[in-house]
Amino acid sequence: MPDPEAFPWQPYPELADAERIARARAFADALRTRRSCRAFREDPVPREVIEAALAAAGTAPSGANRQPWHFAVVSSPEAKCAIRIAAEEEERAFYDGRAGSEWLEALWPLGTGADKPYLETAPWLIVVFAQRRGGPDPDDLKQNYYVTESVGLACGLLLATLHEAGVASLVHTPNPMRFLNRVCRRPDHEKPVMVIVAGYPADDATIPAHALEKKSLEQIASWL
Image 1 (cartoon, rainbow, N blue to C red):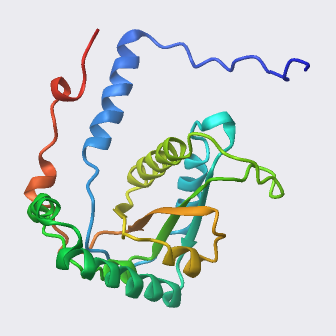
Image 2 (cartoon, rainbow, N blue to C red):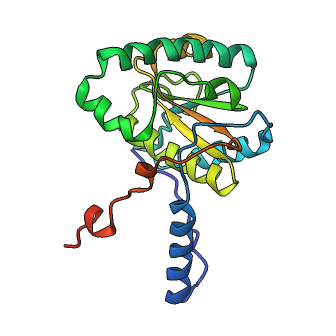
Image 3 (cartoon, rainbow, N blue to C red):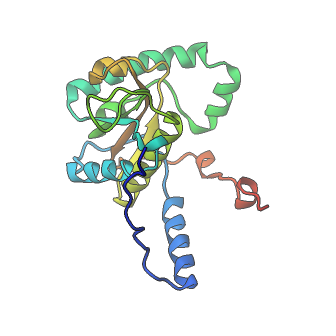
């Protein structure tokens, strides 16, 4: 088998260490202000913002560069309503006992419940699907690798880009989620992973105090 084609590495700009540190800290400080929003305005967000965020997500590293993700972008009132109805049905079962007491106790400080009006109010719902099979070529249905990890990386970049653009977001994960395949007309070999709600925060939006509690650097990192 011949060696694969390759191109020279595209170098980063030359920066002094002090500027590298400043840039890294500035970006970390910007992301530190990101919060999950559960109350949105109906005001439209330009489609170009969503497209840029999806383009950023598409640059994420993935297993064997298979790019095992698909983003179904929902804006029609009918589709958003269908998603809300199905999601709230699953959420009622979840909060009525399926979750178990320990899980519900963990959620209590966030003040969440079965009602999800933001699924209709927010201008955009981005439904994220993980592709067990399928590559850049539409006719390629070969197996993908490290799918969960790859999709998670892509979603992180998507959320960071939305935040940079001043667009609030929320990750919603109804369980089970197979109804999203039907609503978004996606094939069975794609697994719905999450719904990313995107829009502008409502004037009365709040942040639970519990959400401000983040582990320190010493708690999340070790140096060997």
